[in-house]
Image 1 (tube, rainbow, N blue to C red):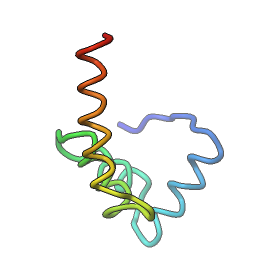
Image 2: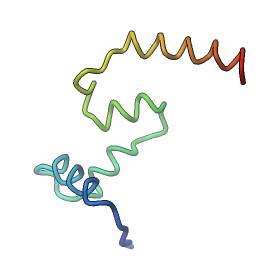
Image 3: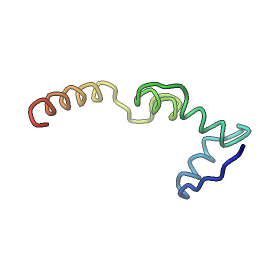
Length: 74
């Protein structure tokens, strides 16, 4: 059964750009949701690999800093 959802204009434009020659928006959304995976994995899948300017080493360092901060202050 189909459902109607509302999305912002910028989201619609992004979905349309990603849709390309795919047959439906549902296909694009299914790919973005995929199977259960980490947030990083879902983002990389949605962006079809690493987005421009993505620095994996900086991400690792940020994760370490975040863990240290949460132990001290949270």
